[in-house]
Image (cartoon, rainbow, N blue to C red; front, side, top):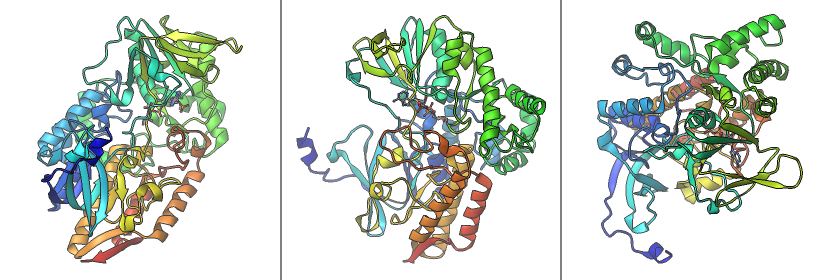
Length: 558
Ligand code: NA7
């Protein structure tokens, strides 16, 4: 093993020179390629997977579905595209979204500039250009490395693309199948007749649990923190409704982008705080949103994430719903969250709570019964009796629905060396710092799409992606037009930006729980609130910065 490290590099590595190297062929990377080409740049995308789609390429678990309505979770840069594509359901399934990504790749002839099954292992700033070193995916042999030189690098690596696989004592002993929702086998998994455990009850767990329960002989859900979940009320899209949106798609998109989360412009946030109205009015407003379903439930009132008392009143409503749905009172108690609603990302489900009424489903509350170790046959947890004894649960398969090293995980897997040998790993050792979520001081001509410090995961991701891609494309075009060679965030501007993100986040209740927004789900990850709440104000700032000749950035001439 060690010897391989000393093998000489390939004497004639295929080396390439492009204007823009793009990492990732998800929705971010694909659109960046399209825009870069349109602006007259040569570009190459490097993609670890065997196809386009990013998140939607990897997350093939049963029930995987977007929780943003499909008429919104789609590109808006091409009216022809948005007119011709037909979504079948209110919330699209993973296969349908993947088909859409593939359609976009074909329609705009993107694949010829994408290297699939290719992992970017390092980025090195050298002689005013980036050296992009890649290897075949899952192949770390240095002699198979290739280097591409690029003036600009754009990271479209995704916010939820690096799986968080927690380790448990003796987990190597388990002889059954193990699966992570974010790296699901392409051929699918048949759980028929099998005893299955699902660890984790975030969106992925909540979407997959009802479907796995229908198939498995027995399903044991292992829950560390109960989530708040709102019914999706998914349905087939009525042709008349689709036609009405398509008749005025631009206006629909415009209204959506003016909301805080860049979604749901047709269902504006209520005008009152939850504690400003009486109980009858409050229940009526919440019930209406509950019946409508989906993430906009929290928008019934305008202070859900700023006023703790209002938040409690809204959370009480959901807690009552859980208790009235789940028949076993002890299971209902375990499933009922007691923390801030919306602090962790709200989940959207189809029959999640109802699934616990099935005879073949049981729930283990890991806070009462922590996992002690894995065995060949299953998992040992502390006994429910409260004594010091343990109990073993036998499984044929274990599903890790344990989420992601969010927002920075995929970036931190690449060794990135900027100006004067500065490593991004060191620059971000206390948490990610940057300017506008787009550029890091010390790393010229490197851009992050929906990076930490931008609204990203608090919004409809495709809106944020499009916004960033267009901003970056305009920026590099401006550099070209002004005969500038490099651009990077000023140290001061970066410091001010980080303070700004913290101030805005500090005005909300987001910092009150151990969410992945804070990095709290990954052991030893620095805790810093990564996304910036509020899309419209952010987009305005980005526009102002560009209009002012890229205020807060240092640029250099050829
Ligand atoms: P999430 O939302 O991060 O959920 C992961 C779940 O796994 C959550 O319930 C975690 O509990 C649980 N988890 C994580 N680590 C452990 C360990 N070590 N032991 C037990 N349980 C654990 O990821 P998802 O994939 O569901 O969703 C990610 C996003 O995708 C989602 O927000 C949407 O935007 C789409 P915890 O809450 O940390 O106690």
